[in-house]
Image (cartoon, rainbow, N blue to C red; front, side, top):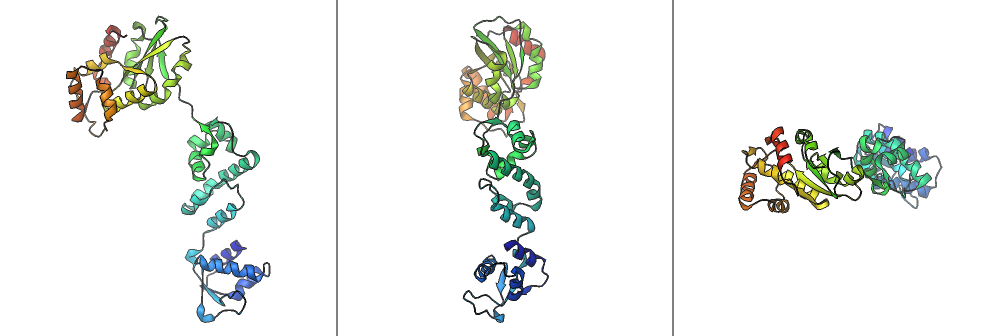
Length: 338
C-alpha cells in the first residue's frame, strides 16, 4: 500500500493533494487507523506536509484536509524496490549500502542478490571451506564471478563475504630443478626477486649444487614459499633457502618477511658483488622498515653496513641487474654455500 501511494505521488504533477483523493486511492482496503498511520509516516519522512490553511478532519486521529507534495523526498523506484525486498529476502542479506549507490549498481547487482537469496534459503550458510572459483560456481553458476566479475565486492556490500568461508590457495612456485644436484639430506634453493636475474642464472643451475632456482616475483614469494615441499616432494630433505633481491628498502623488506615465514639466508656473495658497483638513483620514495634493515645488516661486516645505510638513506640502491649474466653465473658457481 505504501508503494502504491508513493508511485501515485511520484507521478502527480500538481504540488498538492486533497485528503479525499488519498482516501479514494486506498479504496477502503485498510482501516482508517492504518490509513492515518500511513499518512503520518509520509509526513514524518518529509514527503507530505500539511496545508494548515485547509484545516483538519474531526476524526480520532486527525489528518489535514490537504497536503503539499515534496517530490524531492519521494524515493526513486529502485529505492522502493529495495524497501520492498528488505522484507522478502533472507535477513542475512543486508541492503543498506544500496541507498547511497546508483540505480545502475542496484540493477546490476540484483540478479546476483536473488541468486544468493535462493542459495541461503535452500542450503543456509556454507559450513565448509571452498576456493573462490568453487564457491562462485555454487552460488551463481559462474566460477569467475567472485575473483574477476565483482562478486567479492558484492558479497562484502551485502555483508556475506566473511560467512562464505572462502579460502585462497597459494600460487604454484615458479621454479627450475637441477636434476644433477646430489640428493643430500639438505637441499639448497636460491630465490631471486626479479625475472631478469632468474633467466640469467637459469643457464648456470646445472653447474651448481643447488637443487632449485625459484623466481620470487617480488612480494609473491612470501605467500607462495610454502608450496616448495609440495611441488618438489622432497621427503626426508631439509630445504636450505637463500635469497637474492634488489638491495633497496623494498627488497630488504621482502627478504625479512620471507625469513619470518620460512627461514631464509641472504645469498651474501651476490650482495657483496653489488656493493662493488656504483649505486643507482631513483628509490627516494621507498619506506625503510627499520627492523628489516637492522636484521639485514647483521650479515655484513661493519664497513659494508655503513655503506649500505648511507646509500639507502640518500635515495640510492643496487638493482640485481647491475651484475651481468656471466658475473652472476661465476658468483653462483664459485662461492662457498654452506
